[in-house]
Every structure is written in C-alpha cells, then in structure tokens.
Length: 114
Length: 112
Image (cartoon, rainbow over all chains, first blue to last red; front, side, top):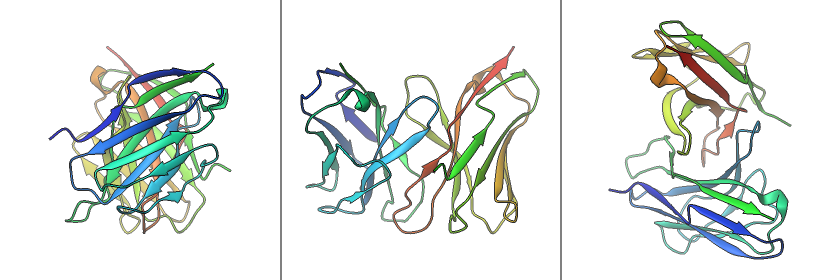
C-alpha cells in the first residue's frame, strides 16, 4: 500500500515549456486534489476532483489544467510554464468508501521555472 | 483574501514546554478544522481535527481548542519534544468536496 505517489520529484523547466505532473493513489479514494505550497502562503488549492471523469477549479487555477481519466490517477498540466509557477506541488486524496475527511498527501514535486 | 489566518509564523519552545499556535477564520460555513504537521521534504500529514460542535479535542499531547463565537481555534502541544519540530498548518473546509483552506503555517522549533 503505497498511499499517494507523485512523479517526478524534481523538475526544472524553461519559461514556455510544458509538463505534466502525475499523482496516483491506491486507497480507492473518490476525491483528489492538487495544491501548491509557497513560502509564507501555506498550501493553496489549484484544482480538485470528486470522482473519475470530474474536475473543478480551486483557489488558484490559472495556468493549470487537470484530468482524471482513471479513479486512481490525477494529472496536473502546465501548458506554458512561467516563473510564477515555481513552487512545490502536492497531490492529496480523500474519501474512502467508508467516508472520512482526512486528506492524505503525497511527497511533493519541486518545480523550478527559469 | 486570506480566509484562515495563522500565528505566529515561527515559534521556539524549550523541551517540556507548551507550544501554542493560533488560527482565526472568517467563513462561518466552515465545519471541519484540521491541523497538519509537515516535516522538511515531506508532504503534510493530519495531526488532529475538530468539528464545531465541540470546544476541545485531545489526542495524547495534542489538543485543539475551538471558540465558535470568536471564530478562532488553536493547537496546544504539551510537554513539547525535539521530535515535534516541524511546520504546522491549520486549515478549514466546508462540506461537499472538503476543499481545504490553509493558514500560512508556523515553523516550530523545540530546543533540547
């Protein structure tokens, strides 16, 4: 039982490049989330999903897109990276079949955009 | 607009002392208030959480105090240990998809 995994762990992009971050969970959770963490700002929700095939915007969605084609995976895409997107990105999941509020976080992806 | 405000930003406590971190919120529809603990290079992990129908919840050395009328809640760590040194985040959410709104974080250092 790996919990929530994220790939890659680190990435450096040049302005304008694109990339996709992958999140996978093996806990049969319905809900999945993408957050970004910046110094002094806590974690901020980018996008989230309440089930396979659904996505919705969070607090800071601009410049990002997401997809949830399979229940266990949640992808975060950056189509044209900007230096303001330099951050640590965390994926989380919650809501097992038994119902529970706890969000389980992955280990994070550190992204630098130059 | 910061819906959840956390203080202090950093805190240094001697081993065996009490660590206290405070949070205030604005949205009265919030109905779930968790605290997360994060160690360097790791993702946050749930420490303890409370619902607004109780004023206090205790789990081991960790206690949440909740004041609904003041829209404030706090984390108390009793008998603080060096292993408690980490960044702590308060958060809040309201029903449905449980979208968490986080405070800014508090870096706690416990001196031996």
